[in-house]
Image (cartoon, rainbow, N blue to C red):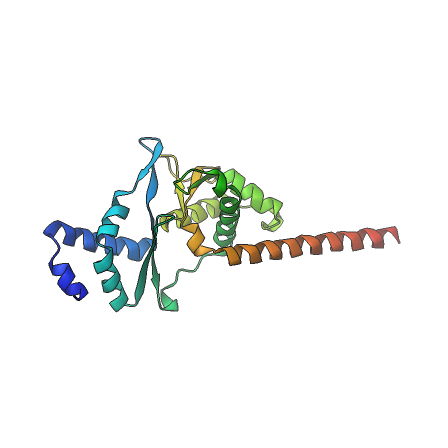
Length: 217
């Protein structure tokens, strides 16, 4: 049965949800099983995720025809929609990319300690401090705009989620790092980054030693 035939068998409400959630996935790329409810102050099942799961087969076939790959990870509770064409990829700026990588490092460090929701709690200050410690910030500083823009971008793609009802702040927010970050940066990439950071640190230490030797001479 084709996707169009499956679609015609949906109820009027399901067709509305099909269109709404199809557009949502095109914009946000990722969707996770559990989200933080700021009103309840706890993590709850994501109703949209459950609806996509019910409509998954027809959505998957529809997107396949249009050049998009819809996939799901039942273990971690992740739905992703990835374009087969590079010109549909979103390009992150340098600071947001580094912020993302450090969030992934933090996720890897603490995810075994967390509960079955597969989320890791942290805050803006902790991420920026780790960036500073790793020598990723030019001059050891970042601007409020960089921090706000990075967090908004990553939250838009459901890679992190703000835990407060207030607006994003450059001074700091409590955030959840969502399991979808595993799809953006896999274990191989995170290991490669660690090696690169270690090499950078060794290079800096060697440079400092050479400087001290030259000064002593």
